[in-house]
Picture 1 (tube, rainbow, N blue to C red):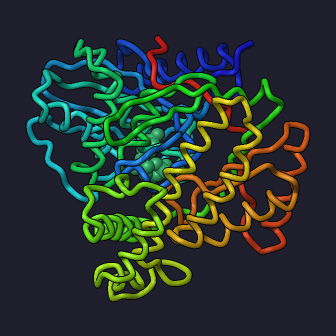
Picture 2 (spheres, rainbow, N blue to C red):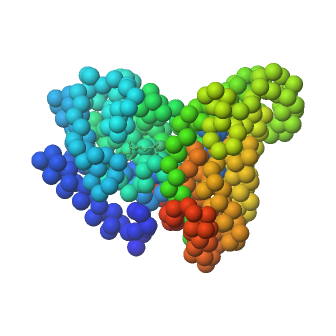
Picture 3 (cartoon, rainbow, N blue to C red):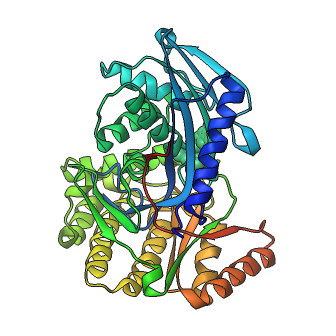
Amino acid sequence: MTRTDTGRTTADQDRRARQTAERFREVYGAAPAGVWAAPGRVNLIGEHTDYNDGFVMPLALPHTTLAAASPRTDGVLRVHSGDGGSSGDGQTVELRLDALRPAPDGGWAAYPAGVVWAMREAGLPVGGADLHYDSTVPVGAGLSSSAALEVVTALALDDLYGLGLTRQRLAQLAQRAENAFVGVPCGIMDQTAAACCTDGHALFLDTRDLTQRQVPFDLAGEGLRLLVVDTRVKHELGDGAYAQRRAMCERGARALGVHALRDVQYAHLPEALRRLAASEDGQEGGPLGPEGGSPGPGSGPDVRAVVRHVVTENRRVEDVIARLDAGDTRAIGPLLTAGHASLRDDFRVSCPELDLAVEAAGAAGALGARMTGGGFGGSAVVLVEEPAADTVAARITEAFAAAGHAAPRIFPAVPSAGARRLV
Ligand code: ADP
Ligand code: MG
């Protein structure tokens, strides 16, 4: 049987779709018009590059958020989630479409409400809807449960109202919802991954012109496994530090006279770093933080280190693609580990748990490992030979116990399908 959903089977996915439809009927009193799914993701390589017009390479997880939905004709949006421990609270939230306004602290309902708001702002003929969600994407683990929630909502509304939008357009509307309605200044990677990934592939995305390429990533066929290590550390410090890293990237670009750091060629990096050292803007990059204090453990980076991370990370994405195209998947391992070092030492968005996961993986014989997602917690990815996977996972768990950290949750990342209609 095909593995499609949370490492299980098509039959499991069908059962979940039926259960989600049944729960919709209990909540709203009638069967839904359909059931849709959108996945969580891990990013293989290309971190903190998507807001620098750079390159990213995510893959969809088998973990999905399902939405059962029906249209409404009275201008009302009702959303319900929260069965079985997801972050919704089990209450139905009811909103009037003509009263939707971006507001901080809008709770979880701001994600789906923001999608409807973004569609209407774009002039699309979207009316009301009833939606019920059921998710297997870990929430707040850096695996993008938020984008899964937005994109499944966007796809359901696209179908219900016959909008005929492209996948990339759905991703852009979902990103606008998160940026402008929820108030999180994320890039375009997560929503594009949820909307556009395909089974058995990683998705190369140029975030400047939004061109995409599906890159075959047949781990099982090559006797490899990609493990996700969810450290269970929530990125509490992440929000402010994320905005500060973005601001430093913009400062670096300004000091170098380029539109975005994407425009700094790898071959010109030494010269760019010399110019930054000589410029006031580059020198005063010093510690980040509200009062010049540190955003996290250790001190923040300076502008030169931030620029070095972005430029070398874009190069690593190109190198990973070249190796995958050459059929040499094992050879991407050292690039993943180099990416981690850059995020830890230059961009400074790692944390002790992520560093330990990567270090323990390496010591146990993994081919490579890196933190994935925004940082300051969340998850790491580890590339291993299939037969060594259980041992490597056990060594990481032991290292966490020895360091006094809570046990991580470790599972395989099977490259899976993007958003789709199930029923
Ligand atoms: P991540 O995207 O890494 O999981 P975020 O902090 O960006 O973490 O998004 C998590 C938030 O998204 C949750 O706090 C909640 O508001 C919302 N969310 C995600 N999935 C669901 C769901 N299935 N039901 C209700 N809310 C959800
Ligand atoms: Mg998110």
